[in-house]
Image (cartoon, rainbow, N blue to C red; front, side):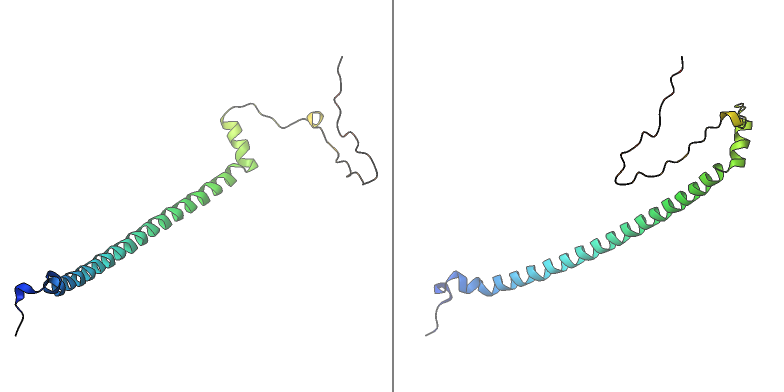
Length: 122
């Protein structure tokens, strides 16, 4: 004789429905995870492109400023700028130039010598 449905346990009646629900949730969760991952990959690629563009801009600015600094350090440009600002700069007189001779490096057996001394003016 066939069993009555009322006498079956609740797990037997809801088992297939729970399995189907779990399978649907698993598929939906995987789909959401896939879309989120693709969105993150797109966003990271966009960030990389923006940073590469900024880096290129900074390198170009650095090169431009380096070239400008090299031009400003030229002796002709320095003289011209000093004349423009009326600084009253003139070339140094030979008596104003102090020449320092380089001392040879001490050898292992000799004690170090005094390299410079201060002259005392009375």
